[in-house]
Amino acid sequence: MAYIGGMTADPTYPHLDDAALAALSPETLAVAAGRPERGPDSPVNPSIVLSSTFVGLGGIDQTARGYARFSNPTWEPFEDAVGKLEGAPLPALLFSSGMGAVAAAMSLVPVGGVLVAPRHSYSGTLGLAQLKAERGELDLLEVDIEDTSATVAALDGADVLWVESPTNPMMEVADLPALVAAAKARGVLVVVDNTFSTPLGQKPLAVGADVVVHSATKYLAGHSDVLLGLAVTANETLRARLHQHRTLHGAIAGPVEAWLGLRGLRTLALRVERSQATAGELARRLAEHPAVTRVRYPGLPTDPGHERAAAQFEGFGSIVSIELATAQAADAFVGRLALWLPATSLGGVESTIERRRRHAAEPLSVPEGLVRLSVGIEHADDLWADLKQALDAGL
Ligand SMILES: *Cc1c(COP(=O)(O)O)cnc(C)c1O
Image 1 (tube, rainbow, N blue to C red):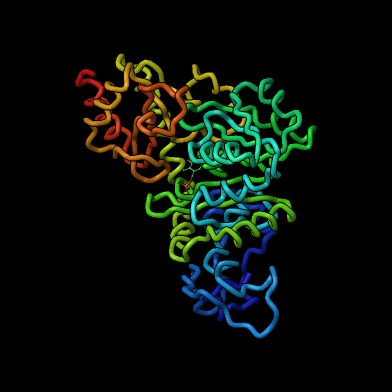
Image 2: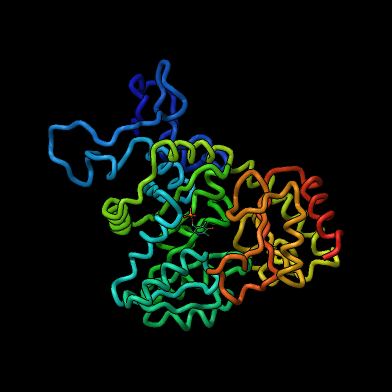
C-alpha cells in the first residue's frame, strides 16, 4: 500500500505484509498498521494531503481517486488499521462523525423494511431511526437487548438488527453470539455499534456480525479533539453500498481530523488498559458509598451483565453509570467536581461525567438520577478523591 510520502519506498527493506500484520496481537497492530512503506528517509507517519481533487487523464470510476469526496490518501492508513483491528479483510470506511457512519449503516434497511434496535441505543442512532419511522421510511421495533428471547421474537420479518453492547448509559450486555445466530437463521443483517468496547474489547465480525460502526470521536481517536466515524465490514457488496452512501451524502472526514484519528489510535491499547483498570477500581469504591444507590458496571460480579461480559469481552470497559437518589442530588454531585469535566461525550484521556437525563432526547426509562462516568487515564486516587469529596458533601 503506497501511502503518500512513500516516494522513497524500497521493496527490499524488510516490512510486514498483510498476512504478517494479521498475525500480530491487537496492541501491536494498533501501532504497526497503516504505516508508509519503508525506504531510505521515508517518513514513519503518513502525510496530511490537502487536495480537493486529483490529477488524472484517464476515466474516473469507483477505483480512481479522482475527487476528494471519493477518497483521500490521508484516510487510507487509518481505514486500513481499523479494518485490520476489527479482523476484516477489507479496509474500514472513514466518516466525518460517528453519526455519518451510523446513517450509512442504517441506509442498509430497505425502504419500508424493519429495523430492530435497543431501546437504549445511542440517542442519535435512536433519533435517526425514529425520524425515519415517522416519515414511513422504515418500521422501528425497540427492544430490551438484554432480553434475548424478546429480541429474537422481534427478528421475524425484520431486515436489520442493530446492537449496542454494553448499551449507553444503562450498561446492558447483549448475548451477541445468540442474537447473531438467530439473525442469520432469519436472513437478518446485523450491525454492531462497537464504540464502547473498541476492537480491543470485542470483535463482532468474528462472531458473524455484518457491519461494525464506531464513533471514532471516542476511544479510537481518544483525545476529545476530533469527530470521526468508521464503518467496517468483511463483505465487498456491503462495503460498496456504504462507500456509495458516503460519496453521495458527503459525510467525509477532513484530512487533518483523519490524521489525528490515526495518531490517537497508536495509544489505544495503553489508554484502554489504564482507564478500564481504574474504572473497575472506582466502580468497587462507588458501590460502597452510601449516597450511591446503584452502580452499573459489567465488571462488578453482582452486575446482571457480568457473566456475559466476562464471556464476550476482553476487559469490562471504562464507562461506569451510577444512580443517585434524585436528579437534584445528581446535579449537585456533578456540580462539585473539580477534576472530572462536566461534559458529554466519552472515551477521552480526560475523565468526563454527566447526568444523562439532562439531554431532552434521553429515553425516559433512564433514571433521572443516573450519572455516566467516562473514566480517563488520570490516577485512580485523584479521580476517587474528587468523587468522594463531592459525594461526602451531602446530597
Ligand atoms: C458518540 C456516539 C455515537 C455518535 O458519534 P459522533 O461521533 O458523536 O457522531 C454513536 N454511537 C455511540 C455508541 C456513541 O457513543
